[in-house]
Image (cartoon, rainbow, N blue to C red; front, side, top):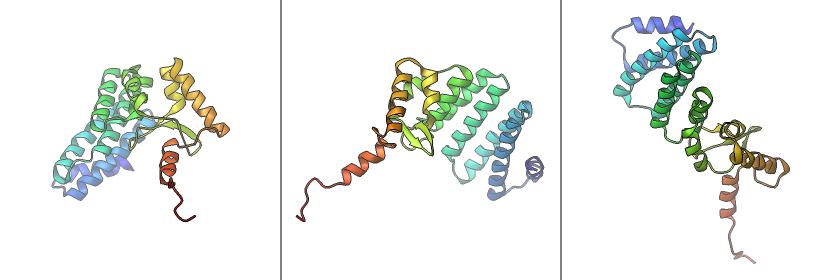
Length: 196
């Protein structure tokens, strides 16, 4: 269904900005579906078209760096699944360039391509482990989070032990589930009680 929509929109030559936006969304969905079905050759062609049409749409209405970074993150997965490690590494690097501090892309680049240098560089910026919806993540503020246990297993050694210690502390209640949020709440408590 997504491929029929994309084919129809690509054949429509004078496209307005709204139609171009719908085409970009359709290409994004089609690339993800093809990747999940294991049709990597066709997915690589689709991701190339996605980049081309997203740039064309960006020139007309303004570039959205967050969705562009997500597209390059998806492209990294597609290239890695197709066995093109160099192209995958390049796509993950482009994702990091468009949205600096993208911990999820750095984690996937380390797992898919064996390139953990960027992940090791971003880990200290992430702060403490956060519990979100039953999972434990590391997150650079305002950026996509990465799974804490997966980051620990990739980086290993003392970092892995520190992450596991923080997770155990959250589970036992010794550490706040979200240390940043707890620090913000604590800063709101007045130092002096003026009413008593």
